[in-house]
Amino acid sequence: MKATDLFVKALEEEGVEYLFGLPGEENLDFLNSLKDSRKIKLVLTRHEQAAGFMAATYGRLTGKVGVCLSTLGPGATNFVTAAAFAQLGAMPMLMISGQKPIKESKQGRFQIVDVVDLMRPLTKMSRQIVNGNSIPSLVREAFRLGREERPGAVYLELPEDIAREETSRGVFSESYSRIPRPDPESVANAVDLIRKAKCPLLLIGAGANRKRTQEALQDFIDQTGIYFFGTQMGKGVVDERHKRFLGTAALSDKDYVHCAIERSDLIVNIGHDVVEKPPFFMEPGGKKVIHVNFISARVDNVYFPQVEVIGDIASSVEAMAELVGNENDWDSDYFARVKEDVEKNLTSKDDDPRFPVVPQRFVADTRRALPSDGILCLDNGIYKVWYARNYKAHQPNTLLLDNALASMGAGFPSAMAAKIVHPDKKVLAVCGDGGFMMNSQELETAVRLGLDLVVLILRDDAYGMIKWKQKAMGFDSYGLDYGNPDFVKYAESYGASGIRVTSCDDLLPTLKEALNRSGVTVVDLPVDYSENEKTLIEELEQKTCLL
Ligand SMILES: Cc1ncc(C[n+]2csc(CCOP(=O)(O)OP(=O)(O)O)c2C)c(N)n1
Ligand SMILES: [Mg+2]
Image 1 (spheres, rainbow, N blue to C red):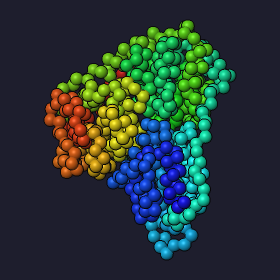
Image 2: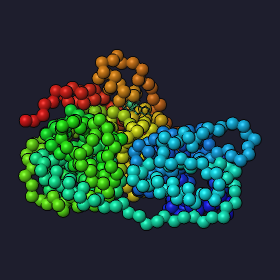
Image 3: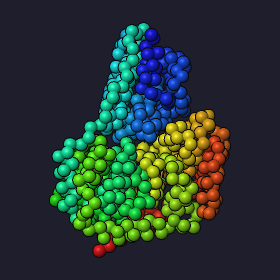
Image 4: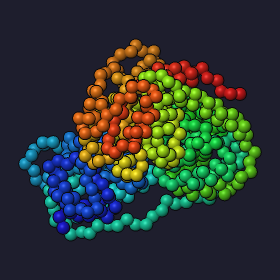
């Protein structure tokens, strides 16, 4: 069998459904083999970075390895940001790229970059395939590593001459394996700490959104009455409308939820790891932390848990629940009052009528417009902080944001991937005008694929997040303003629909209508970012915690 036929067969054996990519001439053998696949659909994109973001998001949402394809050199280097996105964000993704022939070539060094070396620090595995017969084992190994906790990016390079080799091997199948249950002694240690604590809190982080943990956590919370909060990437694991939910730690300190964190003497940390912006800072001699995760804690200056429960998260939580029981002497009175305070403060401007629209209002209106299972995909900008704080996710993985690499440009491609994975759900991308323009060319891809989705562009004609930081640091305003295309006409030129919101009261009906339309709809929303300074800096600086 030809090497590329075997490669495609190996991908089919792994259950690959989509291959996101942008081929070059070095992939033509591969492409020809792919043409005959009845199981794998090629999703052709307009930039490799977008293909990578889509593959990673497919991995994030399915737990399976998302696959993307590029040519050598410039195509492969365009994967770099997506590799970092998947690797930091723990999203299983395989990148495949071509390369010039390795045995004999008449091309000199034309387009040749050492991509295998380039990808090494950004992946769990980076290999050149030097023999067609090694394709089955390398593909199996790439999938095993890509998926295994902690998931991430893997890379395979297929040179042109190897692609054309005749092979004599068959593919390998995945073997049955389960993440082990936790060691009973570590569970007992954790429970001992939980029982002795006066004011424990539960923290839900990104790892809990990767596997089914919802039921176990919900039961643990209901049984014990423990109050909980989340990290940005842990949003929605347990319905944030829950009466014990204290909020999301979108900032590392000083927010309302940090009053509760300061008061607690123990944090039971489910699935958080140090790639996320810290939800709070640990201090020597301060509160204790129990790290419950698939893998042990990576320690740094602000994170050094005293007790660890390693293994399948749901099993760990169930095992702890069994021993903790439902009787405890915790003092939860303070948390109940903080909860009231958080709710009051975070919802006070939900109906603010100003136009251009303030963040509290557009966050509230997007929540009102989307059903509980609707998926909101964020790009990176200042609004991410507002969504993390103010948007209540009702279900796991319904607010997709990147709090690991925190790259601009991923919001729209990840929404496209979300729609491909969940065609029956409503999908809304929320992007800044800066981040949207980093991958706006994918409007063509979305229109060509016939995806029904909405992109809300928050237009402040600036890199707003950096402007906010610039001001907070006392610098003069400089170097961060720009102009924009007419987003309505821009959308229309791709065959998408474009709508400009011209009054505050128009926003919610516009969103609702757009979400019910078929095709791609771009909504241009002028925003007023004065609240960034007023609320996120001045108000939080002045806030005093309840006594
Ligand atoms: C690829 C990339 N480049 C630069 C940054 C640094 N950065 C973070 S947010 C931001 C501004 C985002 O602007 P925009 O998308 O318009 O969102 P806004 O904050 O204005 O709502 C920048 C430049 C980044 N995170 N990623
Ligand atoms: Mg902006």
